[in-house]
Image (cartoon, rainbow, N blue to C red):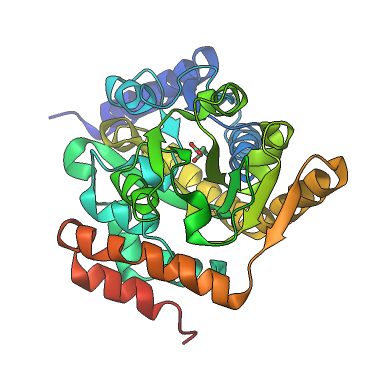
Length: 331
Ligand code: LMR
């Protein structure tokens, strides 16, 4: 048992040691993602870095790797589990191997608008999903918005039958595969970094994404038609390695969680403006026609894709789907 003085001394030494350890060797947090910097996620990662280094000077260093420059799709989760990267923000479509319920976010025509997405993510069910992978050593820290998906193709898509036989790039999601099969198109899973070339060379004829992802990848150069279908969602979960996060000094972790919460509010506020800006830029480029669907046409897509829900209800859970549908009603 240490005497009070000795205990104080030991404490002081420990604190000094921690301080020295920080000064010499700040905790490095690598944040990797697959998109460009001028996108909601790209901006969010930069904002997180700035605030973390400002508020935890000498204690934390954040390195951001955009554009799949450190790890791309397919490798990034494994890298997180191995401790080669500490933060990722994969699209919600990419979690199927880790959490079946998270497939909910890919169901076509589930959310009427981003306000409904907000209500669901901020509600009990949405918050619960952040913790749905902890048994696999993955903790969800926040949801970040990108926005609703737009279709693109080498031909005009107005009705579901226009997509028949076309090859569509999809993210690594079984739900999205089924969504395109439902309109008798041929889905092909492909990493984000391969999209431009895939479209350019005709490996695929079309895809689905948000305006900010299209513009920042120059997809309009190789896709003459966009259809503003808003048929699904591209959003993100910012994730970390559970053991790494829980092992951070408590003061650092608490501050980083505060910063993450602030950044999430900002990203989610700004995502829509970034997509509007990207849409305008594509319209101005004059490369592509932007097609608006009539309510009847949109209804046809909805009806054609809707059977996908039943296929995945067992894996996702009927109650979770009900909770998500309920979020379309403003409380
Ligand atoms: C995609 O792979 O299409 C996108 O989800 C990429 C991203 O992270 O926005």
